[in-house]
Length: 161
Image 1 (cartoon, rainbow, N blue to C red):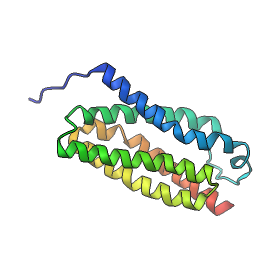
Image 2: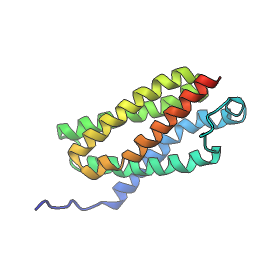
Image 3: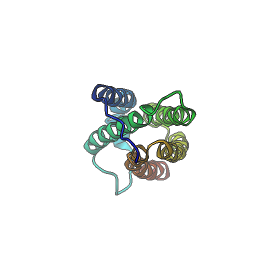
Image 4: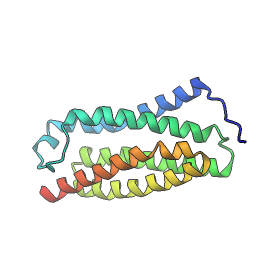
């Protein structure tokens, strides 16, 4: 029988806070452009109201924080763990970059390219995390689903404008 690792709550909370703070970097580029650029774009009829995005991303960054903690606590010096954490860092970078490009540069086409890379990296991240800790991999599935939906929304903005 496998022994369950004890959760160190202050470490878990630290990982969640780090993900929430890093995730909020994108909002620096998003918020100023919602009422000045984004509001005037034609969007998909499935586009949710703007207020939905904040709570969804807060929840997703919470799940990401828990997920990365579950992998990290297995020993970041182990190759499978360090490789998984590198993939996580890469997908997180592309997550932030999407906001910089889509909202900051007002470029739906570049955003579409970046979100496509992000989508692939999230799949790689899920697989890598799954191999270290199945729960950690599962916790990233809502993120993949949301980014899949966001990819559709991005595509529609590009096609309609």
